Length: 63
Image (cartoon, rainbow, N blue to C red):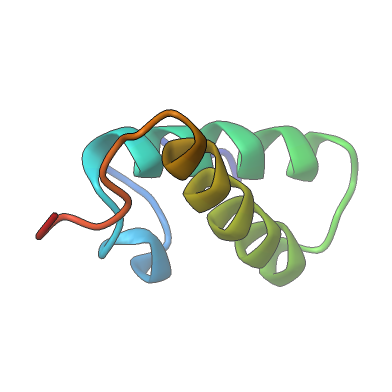
């Protein structure tokens, strides 16, 4: 099931808006490739955090 900015896994709620948007994008791409939902979520969160840090963007909402 593809996610969006209003309907996303609860494990992404702590991410900043930009990092969460990237995590949703990555997770949807992984799902489209047939990856298991749980694994796609974990990988997407990790990659979006790395993406945000490399760009000097906040990773979590409270940053």
